[in-house]
Length: 136
Image (cartoon, rainbow, N blue to C red; front, side):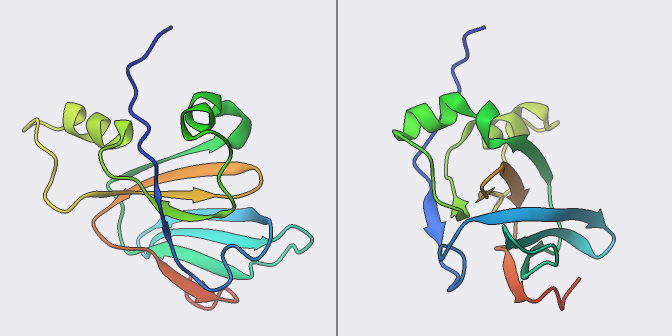
């Protein structure tokens, strides 16, 4: 199946510990308190930090191996980290699914990449990074 998906090169969102080594998702929580991705160093089982959004418009989670066209378009894999992608196919999907056929003002596409996951998040707010899992 051919698709006309758009894969713009994402921009990294800096967080002092995000790119220092490989990270794993230990838990994803979507509840009244917001959307939280618990992340740890590969050898740990407890979350080292949480990437949190106060609210999300939508999200999707995929194994990094199932995003081969995305990696191909970028010329290779991204390091573990948090990125923002403007003009992406996921934003186009949000427009297509909305009743107005317009992108809600201020909606942004964030991508969290770990050793085994690619989590796309549509949110109006930038993610908050909390050390040691203290926030959620």
